[in-house]
Structure formats: structure tokens, C-alpha cells
Image (cartoon, rainbow, N blue to C red; front, side, top):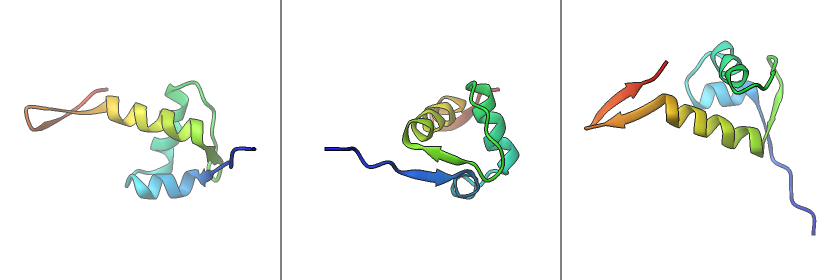
Length: 68
């Protein structure tokens, strides 16, 4: 049985994370993935983005630690 492909637009992802589109594009660029405004993001790319954001915004002792 074929697996369903779920895609999300980069614009919606930026809204969901309250980020500017350029920041989401730069995050993908940091991961070696080129994206443009209005691009679609598949499930694997979405998982990579979640991992990236989790690593960049960790919490230690109840305080948010942002890593650059």
C-alpha cells in the first residue's frame, strides 16, 4: 500500500512558528536544503525542521537557551 504524501507550504510553516519566511528559508539553508518563498515542504523536510528548531531553542533549568 502506498504511503500518503503530506506537504505543507513554507508560508504556512513560517506562520505556525511565528517566524518570517526568510528565517525559515535560512534554517533550511543551514541544513543544506534550498527553498524559495512559496515552496512546498514534505514530511521528511518538516521533521528535519522540527529537529533543527528543537536544537536551536533548548530549555535548560526552565530557561530558553537559543543557540546560534
